[in-house]
Length: 371
Ligand SMILES: *Cc1c(COP(=O)(O)O)cnc(C)c1O
Image 1 (cartoon, rainbow, N blue to C red):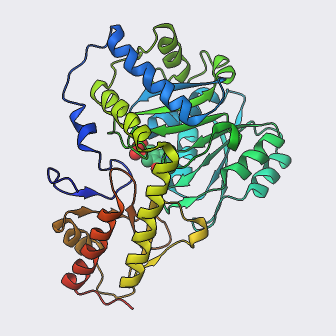
Image 2 (image 1 turned 30 degrees about the vertical axis):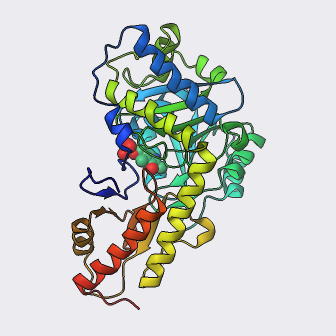
Image 3 (image 1 turned 180 degrees about the horizontal axis):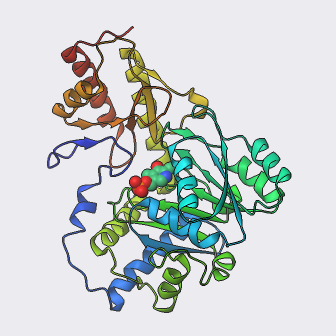
């Protein structure tokens, strides 16, 4: 852990960034000339090269947290006469349903238990039974539980039935090697402050250009109009339609360069896998249990079940860990008490070893009995 930070964030966004990413924010930028626009265009190129091997996709950054980009994608890509199927198994899937309902989009939720992956055959069945369903949305890594949904299987089902697929890959993009064409997605949404390890402030949508070209005037929102945002960025080569989150943009470019220097997405994925392996082995040795079986578990965030000891208080564990300079995440699962530990960001296997030691110390300090 860098000694100039108060604690390591083991939370999946905002997360711990490198000192060099933080340092990249020490300049103020003018946003209307070529120097700044070139940074934005480099970001769009780099995201595209991670997301696809083809040239029929385009990248549209959007101000705000990740949800703003999800809302921009849903509100711009689904036409008035469309109907959206959301295959959900957690809070972020449900959030897409909420977005659609707020926007007045006809929406059907195909809900799954939070501890089970989204089933491609159920998606296929729903599409067969309801020909009016034009679009499907699914979350890749459901950050609620850490579940990694098989989006390739879902994408295959959606493609076979000739519908459009929008993937919330917020917490997986840049941390797991895959391409849009590989998972048969038409659009993907992610943000600056997840696996690519930038700071919060904007998200981005990678979308099939031909699909976006047909979306003029369709957005239910002015500021979240993905088409208008894209047109401005294309026409003026890197200009954001409204005030650009300059410092965040510059930090994100640095984060993308550092991702490449690390060896790209495959190398980063390997680090996250090792982080998560050490976390689970270490905490299991202390007596904690994961919510999910290993087969469904992503390397990005892991949910642990609260210990059975009736004296256990998450707030005490949290405080004891924070005193040891580690910050973890409360749970979000609706029918189980859990806490979550993220393993993404500028966090390395040695940090995880220290975290496991901190857990052992914290458990002794607060006097929790573990099996
Ligand atoms: C982080 C995240 C989001 C976006 O959350 P914000 O708080 O708006 O950044 C959306 N979906 C998933 C799966 C996420 O992990």
